[in-house]
Length: 561
Image 1: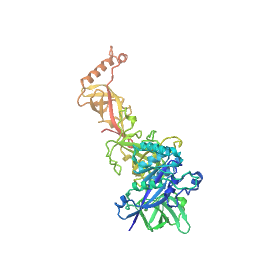
Image 2: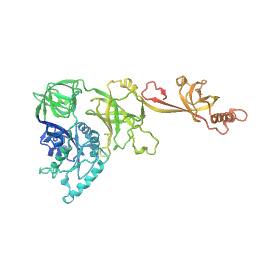
Image 3: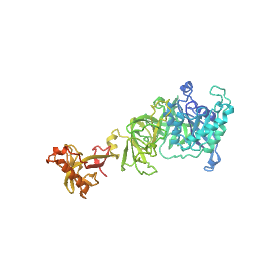
Image 4: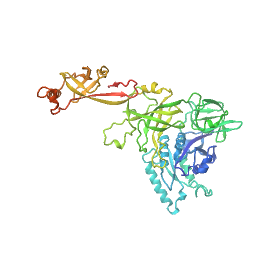
């Protein structure tokens, strides 16, 4: 039986770079949501939502070699909006693509949102074709020179990304501009050949629960409510029962179509429409449906994170970010921490038994700002995200942290970090039930002063504790003197907060001499302390206590390693 493989291609780029015109030029079959059906899109001349369209080609030889039954390729084009304020939609669209087409206006080059789309693409896929659009807008005599110059600039930009060496294809999707009569696109055949040569067989997993990303929802009188979207995992079939977690309802699948053709079953990666028993489509708009009881509604979670190198601002702990997870973007607070020498192959789950160091901010290990500083940066970074409102998503969902409130006209990348959700917080009291299990510590050091020698193996110290402190809790803690000796706190001495330190190896000659000298000067000529106070000061011997404090420990205990 001949097989047709669906392959999702994201069409991303800056606003007005010609993405929709390119998708229209490539496509022969359009779905309900394609080609700017949104009335606002037509009025404003930009794409406001994800558009989907498709076209079919013969499967290339390199794919037929891997699957002898494969005859056709169906390219589903995901036309993502380019306007800066719609970055949430781009993130949602990028989650479902197998390959990316980055559309660049050849007359303007790489712009701010072009770069942000490049960042999203680099995070979520590893194959890309750059389309230099609007080449017809260049003076004919200088056209090739301008194309060569722009191609060289783009390839230079891509050198340090996963897209290094990607093909750059010049086209004119709508010669003469949007108002000109349709005279046919130029260069599209070359682009299709490039697409075919770059297409691979994506990993599709039909096992596991059904998770279906809905991007449009509408009613058909007498039939039911139709949801169009993309299968993220598992399979879905006619007569299945699916859950709409955001509405807390279950619905029966009545029928399904894939680009206007009825189907009985669909699996991961497929683009389709699903008709279920009637409900108000305004209650869903966009979101996820799934096998019942599959998707949790989370209040936060632990994410293994990576800083996006193009973000120039500080990514500080306790700062608020726009957190994109599942198909939603909500405000959330991030607390960053890390560990040293972690396995380069990240684990799928979070290790609660490991110790992690608290980070004031998220800094890349190869940051130039650290070159002249003696700063040890964790090799792996994590974040505890606390969301301002609940979000429904899969347990291992992809996460992007952004500063979307940055001025859209400023020439800066607003995407700060990305990662994968390792642990979800479902309990409304997670700060009491889960966070105390997370072993995030701060290294601390308290300083005191050695007041006098008690004997050759002990000293009396002050400055660590207040008069009312319960010193018994600190008995046995290790200390280090500035003269090199190591010892431990033996107990309190008197009622003023002083304490005794035992030095098992005994005081060094230098320490004994310094304390003896201090004692003599402290007495002065007449043996009085007042006289000694006026004498030249003797350098004190300091005492240091190094310890860790675990930030989520409800008892705020000091612990030494």
